[in-house]
Length: 274
Length: 282
Image (cartoon, rainbow over all chains, first blue to last red; front, side, top):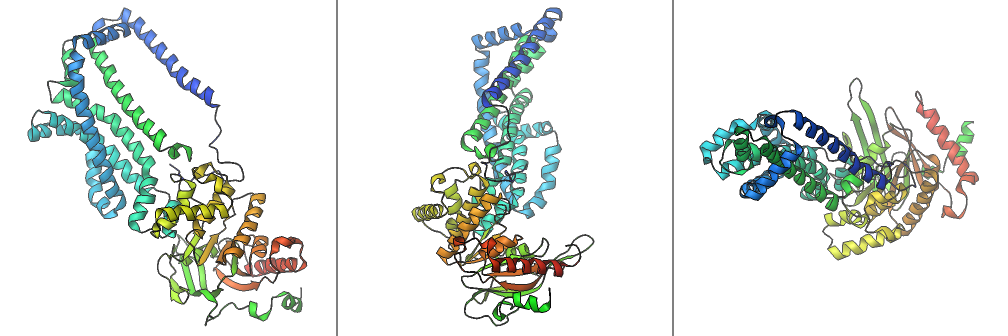
């Protein structure tokens, strides 16, 4: 990721690379995905007519099931529990990830001490830790929150650390030249310079947290969307199952959209300065 | 050209002091036997080989030479961004260690911080010096006015043209009121018109503020237009070969320096010196 790329000339204002006009871009950005969705839904609906309902259901069937679950309060009683645990876990995971990422990215001693363990943990399928979590805190809300923390923590940690290490040397030298001390350099140059990487990590963490939530609930509970997924799966209620899948995906999309919105609203320079 | 002609062209006796051991009271900065090598795969590049010379208070001195002659390295050493293998830089007689608060640097790669507005970029050095908020803002605005950019105070820097960005780069450096301003090919990335406009501006700024400026460039015309003295550097090993006096009247914006007879003589002398002493590769 190059934060240094500047229009090399000249008297001309530093506009980003030329692209299609804004209105046109917006149109393709909305229409193109809609067309794809329409084709997929159409094909699915057709397939649903031919194939056993237990295997695939159909878009109509899924929507109907989702509606049923909403009306009967099945979703209404599970969703708040899932969502609360999800966002608690994500918040802790992101907070810890940024904090430790800054420490590791800033102090090479900490980096060399902890990196092997972090890389090992990051390469491990974290589900293997679920039994351990249960031993520690029981089959409980805490276990599920902890699992979300674990899942969302690593991408934030790794990206934050990489961000601090990759801040443009030019920016750092500007800070040094102007006489900033180490603390000022960290707060005024290195941390802001690492923000693009930190955001990339937060986007990943916020999306992966949903996986943490679902897996946690499938393994460690009798509540939440994950539990319902298990329940309907075992009962071959494919329409309801897929309705829940849709809900889980929606939560993930909302998370990523919110993070992206924050970035575009308050950190415009990340996209504009390149 | 005969040796006599060369001697005639060469500036007066006071000008050709390549090495001055005892600096006078008008010396603000002095380089004493600076050596710096960059070990590389295969061969070590000697960027600076025993470089010594004084910089006078208030003068505009340019370091000129082909790439690889160590002029940028010397400038970075001056500001403490690099460290010499040997020798030292004296600021008003005191050896420098680390980055000096009394100097500021204008980079070729301007690197304005994109998350800060134009004024906030200029304020950064004042923040480092603990200047109170209101005064920071006032001084930043004053600087912006000086470089003619008051209207863009609160815009993000990446919306500015290259020339405007470098004006902000100059304002950022001058804002800390340095005793010595170091400029490293500051106009190297700009087009001709913008570069000439900025040359005029920096000459006026220098005359107004009475700062000492050490200016690195490979553009001989630029050096002649701006400088009191021009230090010629040669590569391989990087070394100072001569300091040339630019005895042209100021302000030089009042007449066409490029067409001035004396300037043309100086130019051809400098170019020939850079050629003949360059040896292989030039």
